[in-house]
Length: 148
Image: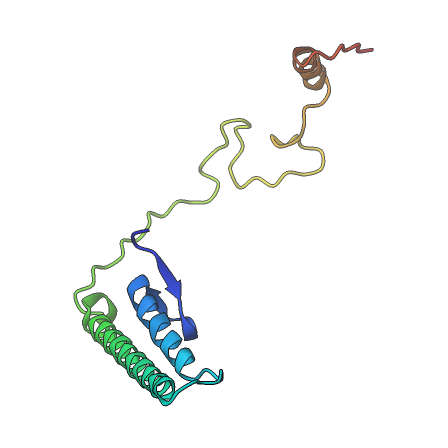
């Protein structure tokens, strides 16, 4: 999965490689701090070594992420679009008076407010239009229609 990412602790973006390194370091720390009984002194030494190596790798990953974050912040701080220097001005939209555009269905201005007596293009058909719709649509669905 190219371009995949995971949100890590604190809402930080983590790539799959940094997530894998972090998981490996956390697993080493967990193995090293296990409370299961040991059979010999070499097992105890192995646990101590695992905890130390896991802590070292986790610290390296934290430092690497902090360096990347600092580099990103420096790039953003020096970018012309964020400093206000060299940024292209945003063109203004042309002024259009409200109501100039007319609806294609009603011929009324687009900002027309319908009253209770007006027929809205969003209303369902009524009267003759409703009867014509019933005569054409329902028979196509196999429904027999008998209008009064």
